[in-house]
Figure (cartoon, rainbow, N blue to C red):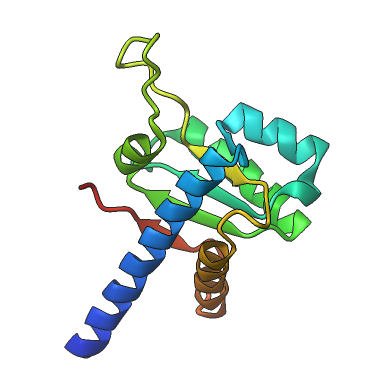
Length: 153
């Protein structure tokens, strides 16, 4: 059993990393250093994997078999290329942050936020370092692909 105070510190750490990730993604988007979408991300990984510093895989529905196959392929490529990977749930929060609904589209047709690549090592460097450290620590604890839950606000 995990002591209550340790459990609280783990939760606080995950919240802090979640906020760091949110800030990193917003900054990367503003700097045009964020590739969004499974297909677009796969194209970039194939063309220039060295430009990628973080791969974020986002899904709330673990039962979507096609999405899980895409994730498996992307994870494999990222692992082979030595890229940091983070799985997150909280797609609705990502939509809020990144303005996923295009004004010219139907509200139901949202941007594909299932895969995002941060491509600039200077994109809010301290936030990138914080997320990267969390991923390294998680891997040391045998969580090969670290996971994070983004909270709706």
